[in-house]
Every structure is written in structure tokens, then in C-alpha cells.
Image (cartoon, rainbow, N blue to C red):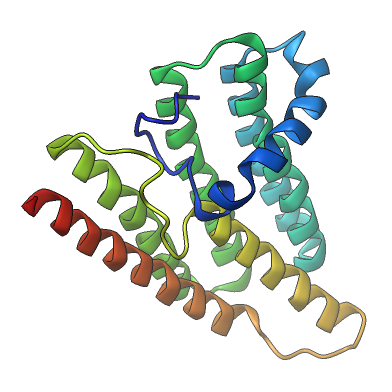
Length: 214
């Protein structure tokens, strides 16, 4: 994890900006027992293993409902690394860099599992491309000029993408398992997510253009 004025990855999202002061004490309370045994970087890797385990389980059970619920739990556990870093006084540049890289692998793992199980490879490709471009647009700007991580309140950053995807999976599972409806909402949902990701990437491009011209 990193100090707020540094840039690494997508840590300071729109949701974080709105609710950070309320969310941080909650995470720190949950992370206290974990902080006694694990470093922040170890918790980051545990978050990746949790997401990978939930994605692997999806291959077996095939339930989008349980996949969505499992991802909520796994990604919630993944958020504990920042709290552990604060409690242990381990905030560092490398910790923020590692967290950003692991975030990309988590998204890639989840989307690959979804594409393999549903066959919606083209839609997943554009979601993943939009996700990575959103991250890269800010990272590449930081190569050119110093930037603040809190000055990018963009439309669909990592946290918003995760919430949208989990909600999509759970809604599909509820419609299928509880109401017996077999209309595939995953495919149109993925295309909507892809469009929102690319709108966000363009939004960041336009902001970067303004910063670089200044």
C-alpha cells in the first residue's frame, strides 16, 4: 500500500473517495487479528489465491449465483491488505505496486473463468481490454508528469467493475435458480460493462491530455 499522494494502480477509486473515512475503520477492525500473523504483501497474495479458488470452483459447480457470492467474499478479503499495512506501519511504494499488479491478475482470472464457462470470449476480451486500458491511461500519465492518485474520480474503476460483475452474476443466478428463467443476461451485461470500461478509459485519456498540455 502507498501514501495517498503517490500513484500506483487504481487504489483511490470513486467509491473510496466517497466512503473512505467510514470504510477504513471497518477494515482495520476486521484486519487486526490478521495483522498479528501476516504482512500486508502476504495478505495481497492471499487475496489472489482466494479469487483463484473461487474461480476454479466455478468450473465445477457452474452456478453464477455462487460465483458472484464467492467473489464478493474473496474481493472483500482482498481489501484487508491496505488495513494490515496501516496497522503494521508497512505502507510502501513496492506494496502499492504489488497490489496494483495483483489486481490485474485477479480480474484476468475471474474473466477468464467466466469466458471459459459461458463461451462469451469476445465480450470478455473487450471488458478486459477496457479494464487494462483504464489502468494504463493513468499509469502512463504518471510516467510523463507527477500526478495525485486522488484526482481521478472516473466512472468505472476497479471497484465499480467488481461490483457490477458480482451483481450481474448474482442476478443471473437468481433468475435461473429461483424463477426458472433461462434468459442469458450475462452476455448483454458483459457488453454493457465493456462499454463502460472503454468510456472510462477515454475519460482518463481526456483528463491526461489536459494535464500534459498544462
